[in-house]
Length: 283
Image (cartoon, rainbow, N blue to C red; front, side, top):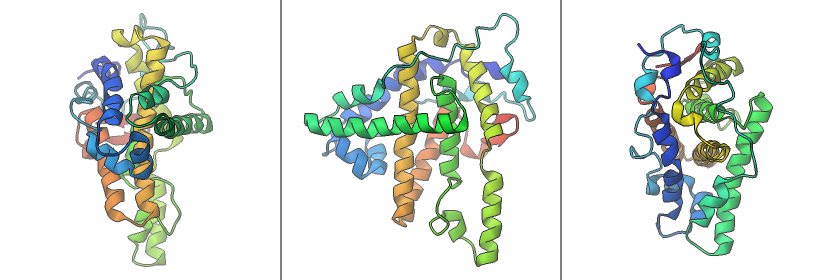
C-alpha cells in the first residue's frame, strides 16, 4: 500500500487543467451571460457546463489515496521524513485575487455583465478567506484549498451544513419533536470537527509538498489553483442554499449530487467509501 505522502503523486495534471476547467464553464454559450447564470441559477450553470467532467478531475488523487490505512496517525502524516521538501511548499505569497478577474474577462457579455460575474466569483474567494480565518487555517496554502473543497462538499452531500432548524433537511425527516432532537444530535456527531479538518489538512500538506511538479509551481499558479477550488465549492454552496431556502428539494438534491461528483472525481472512489476519522480521510 502506498503511504500518505503519495496521495497527490498525479495531482499536477489536475492543477494544470483547472484554468481550462472554469474558463470553459464561463465561456460556454448557453444562452445567458456568465454573470447572470451564476447568480440566478448556479445549479444549472454547473449542469450546462459539465463542471465536474471526467476530463477535468479524472480521479487524479484516487489511486494513491486508496492506500490510506484505517487508524493512520495524522500527526505522523504531518511529519515529513528526512530528505523531504520544505514544509512550506504548498504555501504561496498572496496578492489580489487572480482567478475571478481572469475568468470573468473570458466570459460572454458586456463589460458590465463581466463585472457582475467577477463580483460573484470574488465573493466565493472572499468566503474561502473568511472561513480560513475563522477556523485558523492559512488561506495562502494550496493544501488548505484542497481540504476546504473536500470537507465542505462532504458536508453538502451528507446534509451536514448548519442551517435554520425549520429548513434543515435532516430535521424535516423527523416524525415528531423528540425524533428531530435525536436526528439533530446525530447530525452534530457526523459533522467534521476542526480537529478532523486539521488531520485532513496535514494529509494534503504532506502529500502535495512531496510532489515534484507542485514544488515547481509559482506563487501565482498556486494561488490561482486555490481560488478555483474555492470558486467550485462556492457555486455548489450557492446552489444548495438556494434550494434549501426555497424549499425546493429537487434543487437541493441536484447540489448534493454535484458535491458527490466533485468528491468522487477528485478522490477517485465512490462517496460511500469516503470516511473521516480522527486520522483524517480514509478511503
